Image (tube, rainbow, N blue to C red; front, side, top):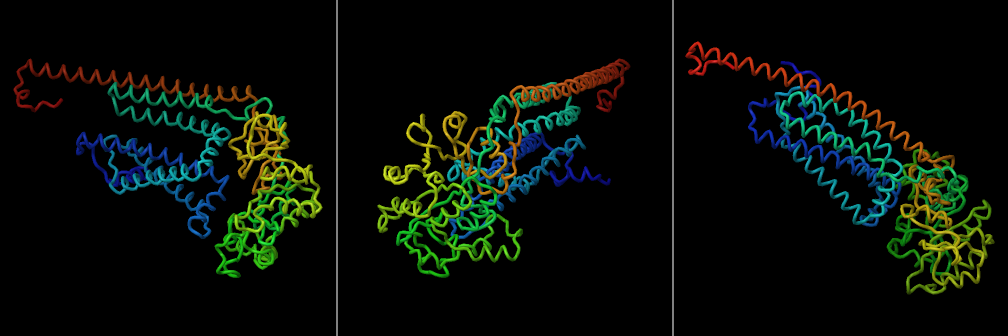
Length: 544
């Protein structure tokens, strides 16, 4: 007998057609349990896929971690994301195939092949390993996942609720093949428990974008994180020019001190990732960046690596002249950055790294940095100075610098601080009401919306070009509007369930009634044959 497309699809799960009459009860139980485990692993894998997708907001942190461990640059985030999508697609295909197997042929028992069982168990192991990796090395990214639910969670709840309502008809179809009252009761309790949870899930979501004051917050200004690294090599003059073109409020960078006392821009402790030091100084490629003189640093190229590694997958948008300009970039000094900020009337903010103990400027690095800023001619009010050692010296030499704290505490402004620079998952409305909050690092629209609704004054971002023309959060509602929409959706879903449940109950009663009549007819027939002395009753030839 030929199979339809749907029937063939249902065989993906089982890989063989095995009638239920040929399967022992304990085997049926084990296979049904295997299907339940498949569903749980599918849900777990989808949770992992969502978590990993959200970490795209800080993808540079992930790729940089692997670079430090392996010594070479590769976009590991994209690779892991692709593998996760393939795994979820595979598990979803198995789930649908098994479901079709139940719906299309109630007389065939579920039977997952050994190959599928091994692959399913392996995928669950990979998911667990992924979460362990997040917990061990990127715990702050898990905080971002929790924060994302306050922006995206409501849409997930609506989608899950609508899908669950649609699944009611599948449950109803399955129930038709099971006339046992206990089975019906278990199905009903399980289904409606999950339904009630999904209806009430918005009570668990506390979003800053659900507020009567969300629209009163000003759009956060932008600080270009190492310039605009999605358009040019990080911490180069070209990168900061791109950021200025995107109308950023300020430049954010990292400053180190050369061996001969010149502050220069460099994030990493060594020069290996963002320069060609292995070609120019092969024996010193693993040395600290501060062990090089300014003359040494000017011999290095700070742009070619960008074209080779393509860290943001943006090379496809560069023409020939763009690539030539990128390939000519050098390591800039702090003075060059300050002069560029003066030209574009932007502020600057940077992390200042203390040189190693055996460095000649280990003790006076703060004074050297201050003198460089004063020489550059930048207005002191344009400098956001992150609190450092020798702060008294900073206050004396540059009293008009805007002081930035790395941590928040009560009455921050009374201690002379103008702003606080914090990772965005840890800011809240009470902070933003008291002091200017600079949230970092924000690269996705949902994160920018969250910072906006929370009241952050500024955000540090790699994607200043992405947020330049954003004029509002991705969504915002008053508490009244949110409650009205939530109750309306729940009411519609409840009505659908009630109406469908009514017809399901009628069908169940009708089926039970027919079964009772059939049983009565069989009993009457058996009694009649016994009364007339039919000997075939004792020989076992009567067909019930």
